[in-house]
Length: 266
Figure 1: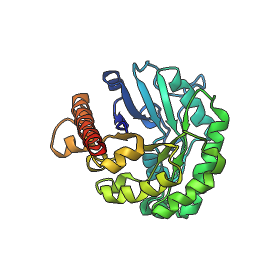
Figure 2 (figure 1 turned 90 degrees about the horizontal axis):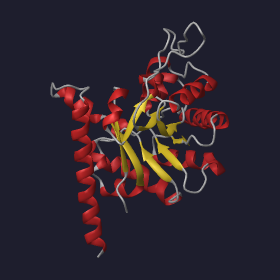
Figure 3 (figure 1 turned 30 degrees about the vertical axis):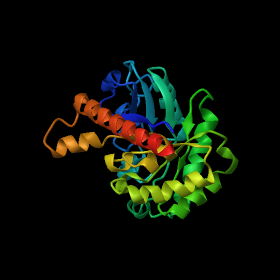
Figure 4 (figure 1 turned 135 degrees about the horizontal axis):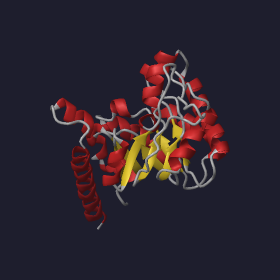
């Protein structure tokens, strides 16, 4: 099986020109008012990046930051879609992550809602976004949960929305992605239930990205852990060359795993 397509996470959208595939948060492209809502110019247009981005990007909805700051999405679904359509005119948006509600204990405590309610709101947002955006824009639904059984329950709740071969994100992994076995325990039952779907792993760390099981299951993945590592080691956390070196390491280890899988097969 081919190794997952890797989207390097970038804090500076302008650096996407150095990469074939990049993950960029919508939070890096739009200005927010003090109350968290999208800011607008005097002419009513959104205060949003105007310069083209010479790359293909996976547009992240920025759920981690937004829910941390506001406990909910301050913007309406209509405003989110307005922003996505503008960004799609600046670059090739390969896919956009639907606005999900993370289900790890930190966010469940933060919102005061249950995991089931987070899952319900995640599907509700997906339905609304998919109904507004044109079909040529790939909207990626997100599976949410914390325990493996919760992800399976959310998978079942999506029902017929998840069509054959659809791209589907798997959320709430980032805080534990340094422990590949935990991620494998989540991914394997999901894959067993729906092996036809193209799964995307959000914000994975190097240890999880090096797992042969995780590589076999995922169609794609993203990570910006290079930036945190650079900051911890007192290097430039915004330098695209750091991102490039990280991307190259991920692709090299993926090739090594793929070679091992081939040798085992024969």
